[in-house]
Amino acid sequence: MNPFSIAIHGGAGTLLKGQMTPEKEENYRKTLENALSAGFEALNSGKSATDVVSLAVQILEDSPLFNAGKGSVFTAEGTHEMDAAIMEGKDLQAGAVSLVSGIKNPILLARDVMEKSEHVFLAGTGAMNFAKSLGYTLEEAAYFYDELRYQQWQELKGTTHFQLDHSKSKETKESKFGTVGAVACDKYGNLAAATSTGGMTNKNWGRIGDTSIIGAGNYANNATCAVSCTGSGEFFIRGVAAYDVSCLMEYKGLSLAEAAAEVVHKRLMNIGGDGGLIAVDTQGNVALPFNTEGMYRGLRTSTGKSIIAIYGD
Ligand code: GLY
Image 1 (cartoon, protein in one colour):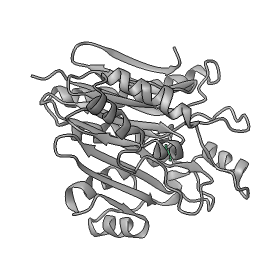
Image 2 (tube, rainbow, N blue to C red):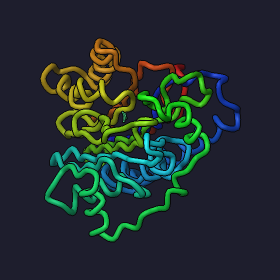
Image 3 (cartoon, rainbow, N blue to C red):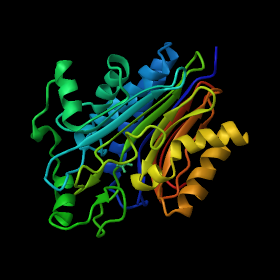
């Protein structure tokens, strides 16, 4: 049996100790623990990496705490437009959706693109028509309403500014939620990565971040690693960040930890990119680097490692 492992994230950003109430911090930790333990138990029972990352991301999407699915931020029009992608390392199969609205779990739609269409990436009206053709029902806007997200939008509404909700805002104390993601290595040595986001508050003009762009915010390849990113998407797109981790392993012979650190602490920072990523390789090794104050994160391995953390400690 191959060593197996899972890692998850709930976004990176301005996460400082003492900024949250203990109750709120406990809620974050509990939700991360739910996603991590559900994923780890599924791996232990022999589920595929693809099933596991999809399950873990679905749990995070169902929480209002994170900027994905139910907790998605508001666009400039006061709507929610979500992006998601999934990829499996065995055959480089991938599925992605962008600019979808009303979909409870965009990660499931991305998986359906991978498994039930001839395509890799569907966006906007076409993606919504695809969902309808598969019988998806749409949630009312009220399902995605969150007072805090609404207030974040009010700060920016009518301006040309937009922001990741976990980046520094006008010092709203709650500037710290983000994209969600999961990566896993299963018992059979197969890798998968899944990522989902509501994008940026007050985003406009059909803005799409890195999350749904294969190789930018999400990538998996059994020859190297599986990666899920979080941070300012424009930089992760320009740096082709997730694929860059894989390339550094494949072409330069770096270890997972070295490649992940090189991308987050050097290559992204050189172009001004803030954020982090989670990554696993086929030996079940895990890396969780970030260049922000904190990142909601967790990992569990069949060799007994288990971590849930928020701050840069
Ligand atoms: N990293 C998520 C986004 O930029 O949309």
